[in-house]
Length: 503
Ligand SMILES: Cc1cc2nc3c(=O)[nH]c(=O)nc-3n(C[C@H](O)[C@H](O)[C@H](O)COP(=O)(O)OP(=O)(O)OC[C@H]3O[C@@H](n4cnc5c(N)ncnc54)[C@H](O)[C@@H]3O)c2cc1C
Image (tube, rainbow, N blue to C red):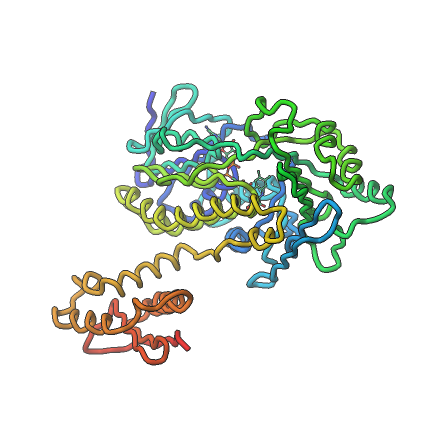
C-alpha cells in the first residue's frame, strides 16, 4: 500500500535514521516552514547507548552551537589535545590545540548519547523556531526508490516524499539503492575496538591501589586524550579520556581482528558485547596497571572498525546520503561525527530557501559537489592516521584535516571563481551592454589572478567572494595587480570597495 503523506503546500522530507546525522538534520530543517519532516528510526524510543565518547572538533562545535547547544548541556569537557605514549609510558608525540575562535575550546569530549539527546530535544521540543519534528520509532526502512522519492517499510507499507535523507549509518539501506553494487562495500580495516566507561571513583581507587598516577593522567596543562600505542604489527592501541563532566574515564582499546578468539562472529554494531577476560589478555605488553584497571569492569562492548572506499556520489534523484551512510571512516582523526555535522550544516544552507520541489535534485548535486571531495579526503587521511598511530608523526597525522569551509562560503567562493574564470557568462543577461561586458572581461583577463598559487590564491578568492556581495570590487593583488570583479555592477557608476590581498 502506498501512502501519500500529503501536506498541501509543504515539501515532504523523510529522514531515515535518528542518529547524530538524522537528528541534527531535523533540528536544523525544522526552522524552514516549507518542509514537513518525519524522522524514521528503527530502534525503540527508549534505546540508549552506553559507551561511545568522541572528540568534537572546531567545525562540529560551531555547528552544534548554532542550534543553541552548550558544552554544559552535553556534559562536554574542553580537551587540550593529544598525547601519545609507547608501552613504557614515554611520551612520543604531543599536539596541543588552541582555544577555539570564541575561546570555548577547539576540542570537546562528548558522550554520543548526550549529544543525541540534545539534538533530539532541539528537533522535537515545542520551543524553538518552527514546528516540532515527529520521530517515528520502530520503523525499519527496507528499501527506497530515489527517483520516485518512495520509501518502503518492513510491513510492506510505503510513503512518497519529495526528499529522502539517508542518515541510516554504515549499513545504510538508502545507500544500497543509490550506489552501484559493483562499488566496494564497507570493509573491516583489521582492527576491533573494546569500548567501555570506567566510573571515575573506580578509576581513582584502582590508581590508588597502584600507588601512583601515571603522567598521562596529569591534567595540569589541560585535558589531553591519552593514546598508548604498542607499535607492534597488529597496531594495538588504547585511547583514554575523561568524559561526562569528569564522572567517567572513557576507554577504547583497539586490537587486530586476528587475535580475537572468534572474529568471524563480529558484526559491526555499536552495542555488541565483548569478553573482559579476552580484553585483559589482549593488552599484554601494555603497562600492567592497564590490565588490572580493565579487569575491574564487569562488561565491555566490542565492535569491528570498518570503512569504505569513497563513494562516486552522495546523491541520486531525490535522495541524499549523509553521515556514516555516505562516508564511514576509521576513527583515527576523530572526524566521523564532525563530518556528519558539516554535511548537515551544508544541506541546511542549500535547502533553507528552496520552495520548488522540482529543484531538489539540482540543489542536491550542488551540495554533493562541495561536500563529497572534503569528506572523501577526510576518509582517506583518517586511514593514513591509523597507519601512523605508533610513530612520531602520529599527532601530526591526527590533526591533518584541512580547515572547514562553510557551505555559504564555499558557494560564494565558487561564484567568485566562476566570475573570474568566465566573467562573460556571469554578466550575460544582467542588463549590461556587449561592450560593457567585454571591458570587464578584458580587465579580468589582464590580471595575473590565474597565476596566483597556494594561500595567496585562496586569500584572493576569499576576499573576492566576500567583496562580491558589494556592488563593485577592486582587489589589489600582490601590490602590482589590480583585480576587477563585477556582478551587479553598473559600469557607468562604479562603486564598491577594495581588499588588499598580496604583500
Ligand atoms: C571508536 C569510535 C570512535 C569515534 N570517535 C570519533 C571522534 O572522536 N570524533 C568524531 O567526530 N567521530 C567519532 N566517531 C564516529 C561517530 O561516532 C560516527 O561517525 C557518527 O556517530 C555517525 O552518525 P550517523 O548518524 O551518521 O550514524 P549512526 O550513529 O550509525 O546512526 C544511524 C541511525 O540510523 C538508524 N537506522 C539504521 N538503519 C535503519 C533503517 N533501515 N531504518 C531506520 N533506521 C535505521 C540506526 O538505528 C541509527 O540510529 C567514532 C566512532 C567510533 C566507532
